[in-house]
Image (cartoon, rainbow, N blue to C red):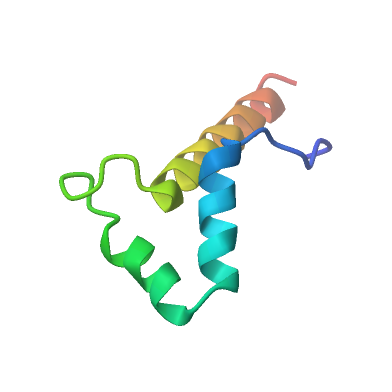
Length: 65
């Protein structure tokens, strides 16, 4: 994995960083609302999905070499 930078949703990243640096209940609120039925646009899920997609692309790139 030569390229260690990935593009992610800035709003989702900001929400997670604010929660991590804020009172403990901020991040816990994001954690308990990860169910897509409860909160379909949960920033943790969004960042996780974006990261997993990047990992898959990197794996596919490595396989095609």
